[in-house]
Image 1 (cartoon, rainbow, N blue to C red):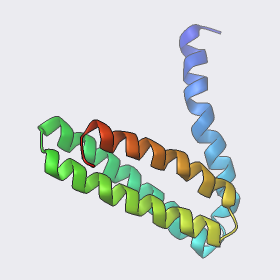
Image 2 (cartoon, rainbow, N blue to C red; image 1 turned 90 degrees about the vertical axis):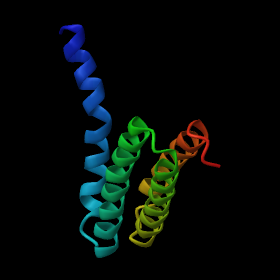
Image 3 (cartoon, rainbow, N blue to C red; image 1 turned 135 degrees about the vertical axis):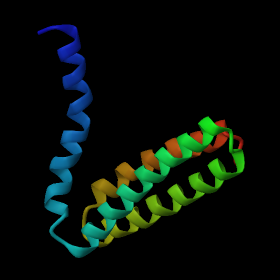
Image 4 (tube, rainbow, N blue to C red; image 1 turned 180 degrees about the vertical axis):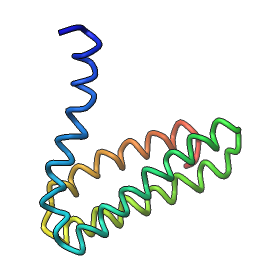
Length: 107
């Protein structure tokens, strides 16, 4: 196996494992809401990166605050539907968000 193929497999392993964990969780309405909140947070993180690229510091910080709100909502919804493991995984996303806020001097 070539190195690029191995790298691609490693990159895909994490998201695919997360998808396997969430497939059972998606059966409950609270889990559907949680997944929607995670998707919204991901879209907002992309938006924050675009704003940072444009140099709009105030908007970056506002958007990162919104991302945090979506992750908090998702974590609560995952806990309500019994998927505590996914709620714990979101804590690592929140840590990453705090780092992004620190880098962008939002605190």
